[in-house]
Image 1 (cartoon, helix red, strand yellow):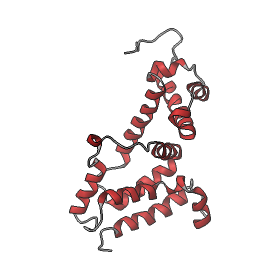
Image 2 (image 1 turned 60 degrees about the vertical axis):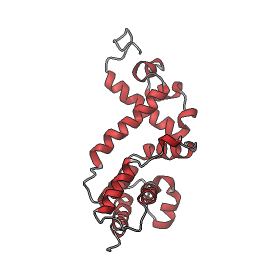
Image 3 (image 1 turned 180 degrees about the vertical axis):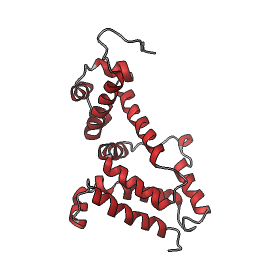
Length: 199
């Protein structure tokens, strides 16, 4: 375990330094992935000494994991599981528009994480269990597979980042704009509502 006591030369505003490193890391990881990102470039973006990455995060991997934790904190604020499915999907669309770098990071992570999971790690994930609950409550048609629905909704919510050229060609909208978030979110909200089979 590393020594976390303040040292000579440590920044006077540790929280600002941590956030600057997280913001810089997000841009680097989104562009280059975990393997391709370099701590020296992250530190340069943040305007701090590269040793501070080890000081605050125990290295590059810790910094990468801290970004995941920061996202989970944000997700807890906007993704209330008691919301109707359509509203929840629309909120994820807004987040992908507002958090484009984080969405790029997730997409890159998904492409690079193509190794099979060990058998003991495979099981129903909480997100799938939530959709199964919604199905039992009538929000999803009983013919639908909740795991497949989750994959479809994840892909749909990230389309503005995954396919920006198609967004411009098909809709004439800027995929980073509020107008796109509103219009696309409203359409996905409607699609999610139709998944009940009662629409």
